[in-house]
Length: 396
Image (cartoon, rainbow, N blue to C red):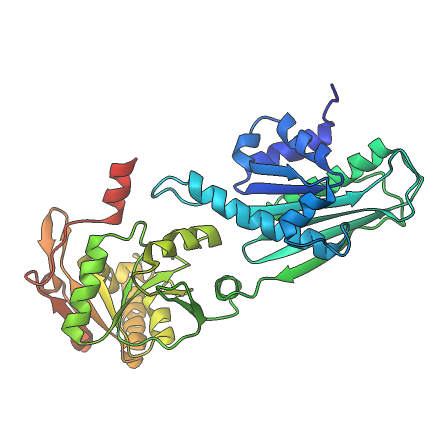
């Protein structure tokens, strides 16, 4: 049996330890790389599916029509795009409720190498990787006649692992040390242009996802905004949004910030998992605004619908700075609330069970200068003793 080289074993172990899951598509060569991935324990965490499209008809079936050239950057990118869509489908089928999604990669390798007859064209391989915010293709032309088929297969497979490791965010050693000075890996990058990808890159400020699935960047937002992680969306969120709309006489939207001050940013696949809960039912606004000062700048004039615990943090100086410097922290709190006030935003506060008791806005000491920014939802109108964390805990 062929022994996996030591440097390959090391990088494959790192790939298996990284979060991404893959669907791979092959055409012509590179499948030794798949064997290497399986030769190191942990491949079940990494590989969702792999297919070898060796016949021309098989590749045409994947792409929907025969490619102009099988071994070309545009062909590899198209293969990777199909692989990424397949990865999303498989990951969705495997996903457990309330379990965070993993990043996905669609990987393609198309190549033509030495065989049992002399080929007229180049010996060349192209590897492409599609991810949520774009794609990268790596092309390598080998000197014809310099190596036997086995050696060329090894180089294309090493190029495959190089591409996968780079897309996993790993520091990649030189996996192709036997290339000559004239054999250079070409890189081609493309950025996805859909609104979510642009939001993840910071190119747009917000994305509104409508019940029919439409995504609109920087759409005007008015009325009430109920912000949350929605992991999961539950009856309490829906009821509170309904009460807010009725109380204010304005539409109420859900807002999912993709950045969180405490937990870090969400990956694209996790964002898509969460917004799927709203499909066909409600509109949800995605933003990069983790703090209410940022939300106020982004959505001036809106009313933020919050629970008692969030309102309590908003007027607690210890959330604004060093607890050993209370005067400075209080100044920062007043400045933040002042920014929100200047943006003509306000808060609609619903009661919640806190430390074993149902607490409302009346139980919070609001600084007098900002008292007119906070309005209460009565217990008669809304009381749902339910939280996303409790739901997740029950499902574990």
